[in-house]
Image (cartoon, rainbow, N blue to C red):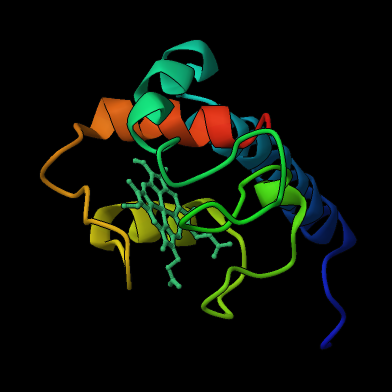
Length: 116
Ligand code: HEC
């Protein structure tokens, strides 16, 4: 007899569903840890080079709607990780902020950038 036990199968499906549902809010929570209001204050030092209220280039690209775009200027996808890496490492014409900003400041900054 190679028939699967239907009760066991159903139990497995129920567990898989519970695990999937439980994982969703955990991810959402981690993504929302920054404070956009504080991030705006942190952004003061970026605004010399970046517009927040338009996509127009200043010294660097305008950042309005950044997280609604497909790609960064480097061709990388616009994800929280890639934007954070840009802030950490800088680029041609942009200083690296890895040592200049704390992790909390970067969380706040990302939360703010998401509102643009
Ligand atoms: C001295 C000017 C300067 C400052 C200050 C600066 N940037 Fe930039 N930034 C640039 C330039 C120039 C680029 C484009 C780099 C490239 O071509 O890869 C850039 C690129 C970016 C990008 C990628 C945008 C895209 O569409 O590809 C992001 C995001 C960004 N900067 C965020 C920040 C944040 C946040 C700060 C403040 C912590 C900051 N920048 C400070 C000049 C600056």
